[in-house]
Length: 286
Image 1: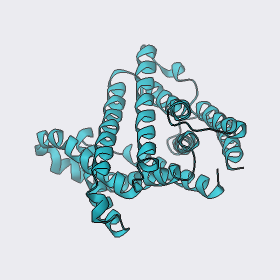
Image 2 (image 1 turned 90 degrees about the vertical axis):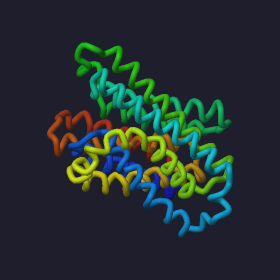
Image 3 (image 1 turned 60 degrees about the horizontal axis):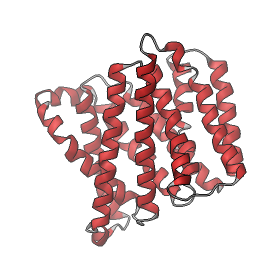
Image 4 (image 1 turned 180 degrees about the vertical axis):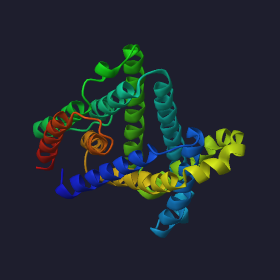
């Protein structure tokens, strides 16, 4: 993978970690929070997509809206599955299992379904990245409480939805030749419509939620689409099977920040995991 593309995916990982950390400071209703930043992201991305030359022709292309609609359904399924897992099992199990299984499934299905072919070195580097992520997150079962099996099931289900939307979005920008910015802007618009009934049902709490979470909403609204548009652009230049594990290096950044900022501990193990991830990135970039 070209070093410039690696740098693009790593920049996306930093942006992804930034908006995930911002979301930790959410204080209001979760559905209103997601609806607010999704709508704000759409309002931000649509004018940008038009300014960068998406043009009326592509915005009226049925393939754009068909691809974006299916993508929005998959992204919504991911959000709902993740939230259901958090409601029924330990976050410390669901999250690392999801972020670990997601890139593994994406790699496998990108090779089987998209026909991608990776060199031995590239496969080894991607495997190192996944292994390093697992070292950083540690053994989820050690903090699983009384429901380890549920956590594993919901985490794996969430990882499957991550793989599903990653593969579909890769197909959309590569095979359907849809511009990443306009494609994701359309996806956000459809997601906003999907979330609209739930948001309207909570409209009496909307003003208080917006006041309480104004700054996190703004941060997520900017950095979430930035991160994913960088990933979609990278898919045009590198195999999806390599982009997927690289983008999950965001969990390394978030884990280190959590360790230092929130004093979660296990710094030595997390640094060891970072070293493994960096080695994998070096192999992929070379």
